Image (cartoon, rainbow, N blue to C red; front, side, top):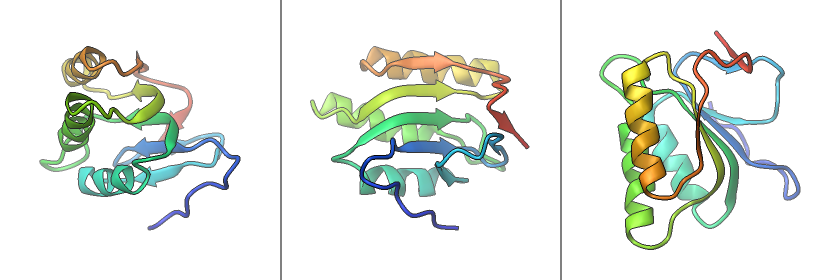
Length: 121
């Protein structure tokens, strides 16, 4: 399901999670696979993402690592994505810690938020 981008004054919030959604119904672009997340990030490459919420395990063999690699490559190339905060909310503690470590290394502001009350199935 495609969600239109937010209006010009609305903060852009992206949720990458195969199952969960925001419980408060906030305006967010929700993608369920890493491929869809990479495509969405590329479409908003030159804009600001206020919040990027990442789940590690995205169902089956899919994980958030392709998304992390896009963010990492952008920072390596000297053009990191403009992201206010990355929230890693995975129930996979080892995977979440590794994602946070990699993204922090490249200067992204990362918060580990497992079990966030903002999200539910």
